[in-house]
Structures are given as structure tokens and as C-alpha cells.
Length: 406
Image 1 (cartoon, rainbow, N blue to C red):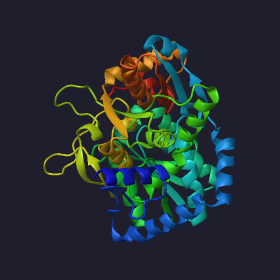
Image 2 (cartoon, rainbow, N blue to C red):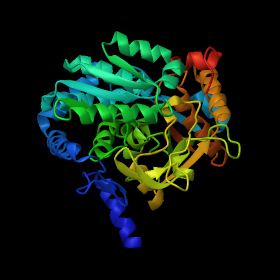
Image 3 (tube, rainbow, N blue to C red):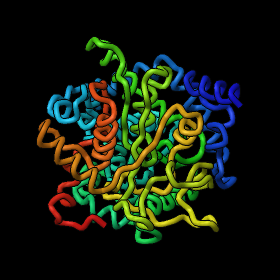
Image 4 (cartoon, helix red, strand yellow):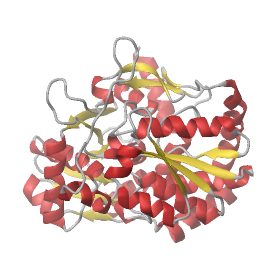
């Protein structure tokens, strides 16, 4: 068993695409036959392009000129003084469109252009992936349609309007749970209806192979930059890297920079909801069980009959009943640890960061801040890197009570 764990961890550190689409027992490709050839073509093309020097040069130039990379690694002395730690924030909120989502959206849009498709479809929860996809599609000259649950559209109206201004057609989903899960369902139905002419730009490290690997590769720029920035500052690597986890793309991106450094702890923070016994939450890694959702085997929040349970988070981007398969393997291998914080903890962290640092974090990022603060309490003087996945402008209506949290 030890050798098996060691070999699996070595494969993760190496970073090559999994030949069978599996991260240990997780991942895979559970899709209708109509999509198998499309996914196999995407697998071949993505592996080819991500190894191609010309594509990599174009992507790097676009990351610099369109996204605004590298993003800052900002010292957070106000939080550090309060927490008794040395705190740094990896500032994905400074990316064009306001979150880490553009890293992946732009990369996939460049692939879609090379595949010769006629349109892009996507899903969105908090709206950040939808905005990023709309911007990336406009950048490469392709029309795009974004599916968004009506509950999320109400909670994140500014992002809904931003998508429209960027030229996207937004279709509101009124079926199912009317949040991210239902938006993914509808986007996948659209894709199945025209798999050759439509490109599905999936927003997280979930779904069928090659998406979990491909999205990770586009988001890994976060962790590689953070590692280099920490070393350049002197003092060496951090003691811990902390990020929020819904589907898990910003977290896997940050973790990617440090997964080969055993002295750096990797800590993912899930959404614990209201925190009461029996209350809905989105802590999939902490409380889920294996099953198949949206084309992949992964931990899910499901009942004894395999029916997906209702989820909840004050952060729309974390309100999802599954998680990326690579996170599940990192958990099983003991390389990363996953905890949860409540809505109230996240709100407290948002207000603390805003007042102590002059930075308004997204509600999703605020979960990571709350988890980092708790970790710091038992590790005085530690060096902490927190993934600030996005800015909180999108959450103003929730924070002011203009729209309800649920």
C-alpha cells in the first residue's frame, strides 16, 4: 500500500496527463457515446498544444497582456499582526474579470479556436466563470452561451449583467436546484446536442477526462508564481498554502506549485454552511462518498440511494455537491488536508480582511481566510500563503442584504 501511495504521489508531482483519465480510483470518463469521440479529440489536442512551444508562448503573452499576470503576492501585515503569523495573499482578485477563472477560460478558448468550433457554451455559479468565459470568447472571436441557475442569478446580478455586456447569451436555469449543479446539467445537454460544432468550456477541475487535468494545467500558473515569489522574497517556502474548495480549481492551481515540497502543508477549506447538525452544506471531501456526477467518479454529497443531496453555501461558487478527483486523491494520500468553515466564519473573515488590509475578498476566498486564521492559531509565527481567488465586488448585494443569502 505504501508503494502504491508513493507511486501515485510521484505521478501527481510529475504532472503528466493520466493515461486512463484516473486520479487513483477517481476521475474517468462517464459520458454518452456521442461525446466519447469529442472528448478523445480534446484529450489529444490539449496534450499536443500544452506541449507545443508556439501555443505556450501565445498563452504566456495573453496571460501577460490580457489577464495581467503575474499577479501580486501581497504581504498582509494587518492580518499577520492579528493572527500572530506571517501572511501573504496570492492576489487572483487582480486578474482581468476579477478572479482566477480567466486563467482557465482563456486557455480553453484558445484551444476551442484551434479546434474550429462555431460556438462556446459554459456554466456558471458565482458568475465569475461566466464572466471569464464571455471575456475569453470575445477575445478569440467566438460567440458564447452561458447557463446560470436562477438562484445564483439573483444572488450575483452584477455578474449576470457583465456577461451580457461582454456579448454572451445568458440562459437562466429554472429546473433542479437552480444553482451550479443544474447549470452544468443544462450546459452539458446543449453540448450533447451539437458536440462537433460546440465547445464546452468547463469551469473547474471536475467533469470527464481531460477536463480535470487540463483545467489544472491552466490554473497551475497560480502556484508556480506563488512559489517563485515566496523564494524571491527571501525566507524560503511557506509553511502552509491555503485555498477554498468548491469544485477546486483555484485550490489545485495553488497547490500545484507546492505539491512536490513535502515541508509545505496543503490545506483546502470547504463550505460548512450554517454549521448546524442536519443543515445543508458543501463539505464534499469531509462528508461525501464516492459516486458519479457530471462524467466523473468523485466524492459526492448523496443519500443512501445515490440521490444528490441539497447543498448550501453563502458563497455561490462553493455551492456544489462534488469536487475535483485530484483533490480526492490528494486527501487519500495524505498530501493535502481538507476542513470546513461556516458561513458566519467566512463573513467574519471577509470583514476582517477588508478592514485590516483594504482588500475586499470574495465570499469564496473568505472561506480560505477563515481556515487560515484557524490554522495560524495553533502555528504561531508560521508563514502562510492564502489563495485570494477573487474580489468581493460581486457579493455586495448579499453583504448589504439587498438579496437574501439563500
